[in-house]
Image (cartoon, rainbow, N blue to C red; front, side):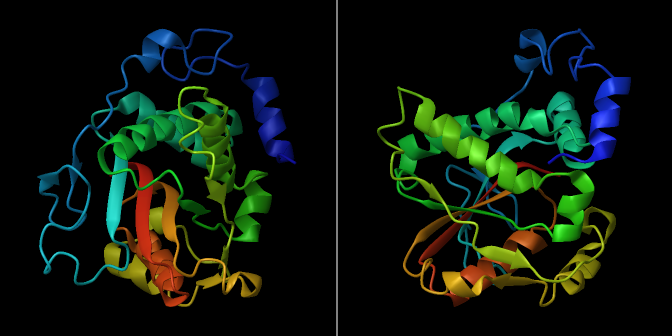
Amino acid sequence: MRSFFAHILELIFPRRCVGCGRGGVLVCGNCLRQIKFLERQQCPHCRRENETGRFCRPVCERNYQFDQLIVCLNYFANPLARKMIWKFKYSFFENLRFILAMIMKAQIVFQNQKVGSFSDAMIVPVPSHKKRVNFRGFDQINSLTEKLIESLKSDAQVREKFKKLEMCDCLLRTKFKKEQARLTKNERIKNLECAIELKEEMLNVVRGKFILLIDDVAATCSTLNECARVLKKAGARYVCAMVLARN
């Protein structure tokens, strides 16, 4: 159930396009056409451009637990997308998940054409603490992930390729910590220590699996790294992190 505050916001501010303010739609077609998708990725560490988002040198992957990072959008080149992500995450606009999921879907289909690894992936959302879920009225990453899978399986053109796709809500945020976005890189790493665990009943579920780890925005990748560490410890074969944008 969405928070009372979110319902009040909708009454005070009727639905208008996030980009131009046009009434009746969350985001109008003209604004959506302004969004620039990333066709090339980068090494997660040194940011050297490449096709796959994998690490380009052994020295680059030394301090990371995930194997690959796929970014859907350039955070700074897409002010509309940046605004949508912010409203989805901090202003309780849960319905924006429909559009954000479509952005992720497009990138998954594009990447799968190149490497063919995503069609049977286990999709794992980055967990939120239950206090934050209660405050927002919904778990934004879980909600985004559910809509992403639904959009892939309901699309007649690609659903056959992704029919084995499944979501596994296997991670648990056990400690209520400060918001990562408000911290420095070193503070983020310390803030996550022992804060994410694998749910006990999932101990054997992720073993040997290709994991697609979903989050909204990555900055230092500390949250993705901690989640990947837990998944690898449980026996995950490969962890590909995927975010809407990286700032």
